[in-house]
Image (cartoon, rainbow, N blue to C red; front, side):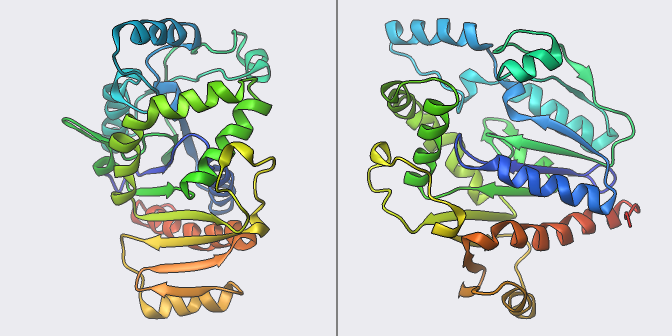
Length: 293
């Protein structure tokens, strides 16, 4: 954690919706004049797509565990090294994971591969991470302690699965059976390396559907934001009564359901994120002495 070289991280499971928060935060960076070095969580996977398939085949025969949620499938040490180096010196190395044909054309490589490691741009104001392990704790590695603003995105579990099923079947070509197996295969690592992060965050956003998602494998469409409520839980710093009342006045339909908890209409989620996160990011920028206009 560093005042001079702050790190902002959005963390959440596959299908949780971290990319939605990333888009909101990108707008905030532009608005306040913050030059961010972007880092993708997928870039710290241990294996490329072809290698992962081969390793998974081995684990089936050996009865061992492997998933993108746990340490066996990731370079936690490399990510931790980046976080520590950036927080101390504003430097470090990153790479990109190529998901699809569009990115393949951009980088000139096959989908499912990694680019070479490259230095973080030297003139960045902060580091922004979006992925699975922004606050992971594993052995001697405590990623959360290196992050200045850790944002958790954790929809109710069935909604998370609905979003993953829809994305993986419609956008990535997996069968429903493949997705079901992947959810099952990852469950141990999900419980030990994903869920604990949400107790280390500064703020959590949890979307709650108002449609029937009781069987995620029978849901044909992802519930829209207008078909949802969003619970916002402040872990650190604790919000004052005045601040909560101010948000309730600014966001129509807000309910104060606990000392540190607000519930808002889903359609107001992006607006609420921009209100709350802009102030938190501005505070980070003020501490390092560079506030944009």
